[in-house]
Image (cartoon, rainbow, N blue to C red; front, side, top):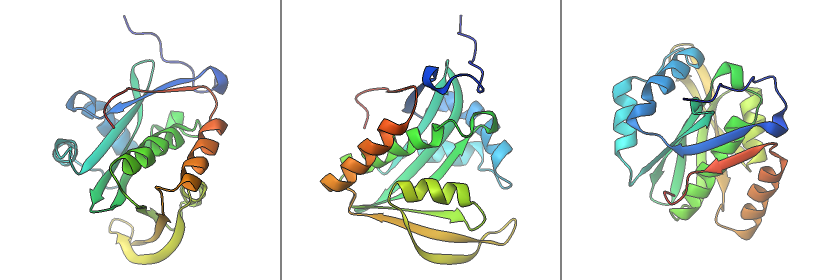
Length: 189
């Protein structure tokens, strides 16, 4: 029998989050979140295709008491990794779920030999931009009308030289600030 899902309003120091590879069995929960947070959600088929490309993609889910509360993904292109998606169930936002997943993706990119990380973020999403800046992302340009459903521009951001000891120290500092416990299922990065 599954444990009851903890109350998101509970003590963050008591929170235990498990990060594991996204699998087909997670997609119903992933799609539930996707439809809550994006005006133009990805389909089951898109996610299935992405998680099937294991040599060039890394997709993870964050679970609390066995329930998916967030997911994130990246694709590798030569020595760059592009963060393709980061989403957290609205009830679990502001609990450092995205931070935990980004730590795993950044370390996954480093383990795969990537030198840089990149992503696009809505110009209006200052909260996400602040999170990415903590990970060393800096603005590099704008993609006009990138989000077709709203015609909103995207800010292109890059984090360079992620394989350095300095970047490893940055990740360690971020990880120390995350309350509670993060368990990364082993052996798959």
